[in-house]
Image (cartoon, rainbow, N blue to C red; front, side, top):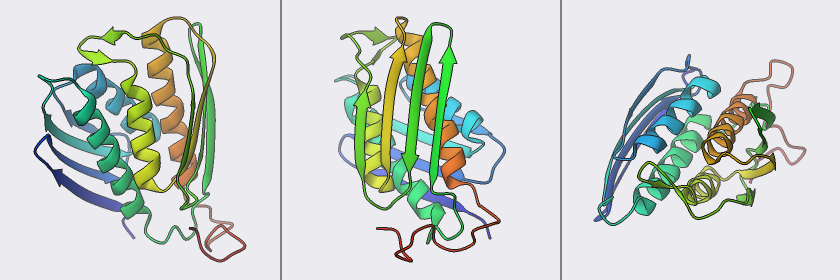
Length: 196
């Protein structure tokens, strides 16, 4: 059974369409007006082995906040839809990954209960035309709409590009693990018999 989804969100601030296949091979087709964010979304596809298509337009002449947040919202909803009743998933996933001097852990529970912790101290700065503080905005929006418990913690790091990129890669690996099917446990992974 295909675990795919397509979600659209159109507002006065943004137009977002995301299609994904949780059981893909890591193919990405990303079109956003924020090149650094596009690069990060490619990391999610590649390291999460998710086939991911993102088309986004937004009011980036103001700043990248609305576009970044809305992409996070739509991606979270697409993951939630593709998971269906979440029967047979591993539910939990985590990854601690290095990128040169940076080291970040992402831990994810596809629990049906949204909660988000961000322990990644960053200065006010830009990477290209993208404010680095928007990484937190993106991940919080994802956790809320995917109904997931997500923690991202920086252990080491000084280079902003490395810290943000390895955060996205660690998230991708955690999502890959949590969303994967466990042949030993075909039921809903909860003693309650449901996830919420």
